[in-house]
Length: 171
Image (cartoon, rainbow, N blue to C red; front, side, top):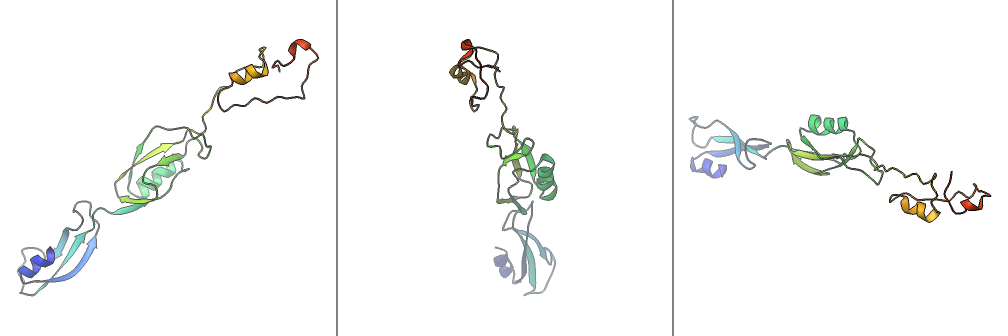
């Protein structure tokens, strides 16, 4: 360790401080004073700075942010990188189209420069409703034609006196 090396050289350990470094591994000495190679008297104190590794930044929960907001927060403010994953539908309806649906490293600390993968929301998935009103589908047949998630209700306020149209879907 640095203290052992100083002791062997008949020097004493001075002030030890820590500092984040992108280039010096955590626990290693970044710099010292007086600098290496300087001639000093025995017992002189040598101060040094120890690396804590890359600077850490907190990644919060940024779901619901717009693209511009997430870029400003992660890249500009925090010094992180963004990898854009394929956008996905949010069938819960919680995150509108064009907002952040999810991202990794949520509510954790990461090293500055870390890449955060972001998934944008396509909003709720949209489906096309088939036209069953101009056909002669029975109510049960009309229900079977509907995609998952679409329900069919009966409007009893509209009636017909035509016996050929009983239980037939019509407008």
